[in-house]
Length: 245
Image (cartoon, rainbow, N blue to C red):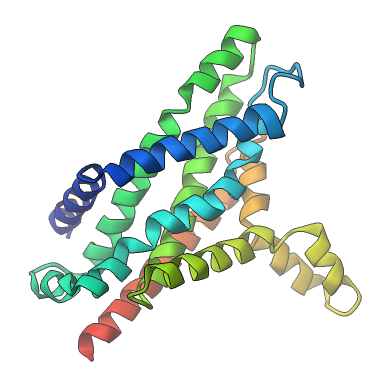
């Protein structure tokens, strides 16, 4: 199983860097994140030695960039017909799913590591809590894994990458805002307290913000890992069903 995952992982990660689109994606991602940090969030004007305004943008940047990265995972395989070749190899569907998502996750981690100049800048200008920054990076990676698994799940449904992207954004958005006050107020008048608490517990944004405070709680880790596992399992089930057909 592990060797199969490694084979798919190397194949997928190599395909990213074998195309100029990967470098364009990284550049656009870094420029968008940097521009919004310095201008929209007024990073320098705040006068605080913290990357809170930087990490605050991650859920919304990921909301569009990661479904764009994940939309090709299975949709492209189905469109070109290579999915039949892949599934005839002695590789389990689950291993292929995990390998694909891990490759996209590693690619995202590389793009995230390239934001280190911001960390260097805030350390040069002040004395930040680097433990909080490290926890925030870990939380950002966990959130990225959740979004990518959702995108892979949606990509398994269709051969059209545009549809996969739109549906991926929609699913990620629902999980992002499920705990937002404006949404919870809609349910307050008629829903029970347990329903509201359940909606709040599904919020990616809420769990991510908890980690960015510098404390990696076991509940937040379990939430992200459970979300990733669920969508990987569900996506694998869809591919298996189509394989049987």
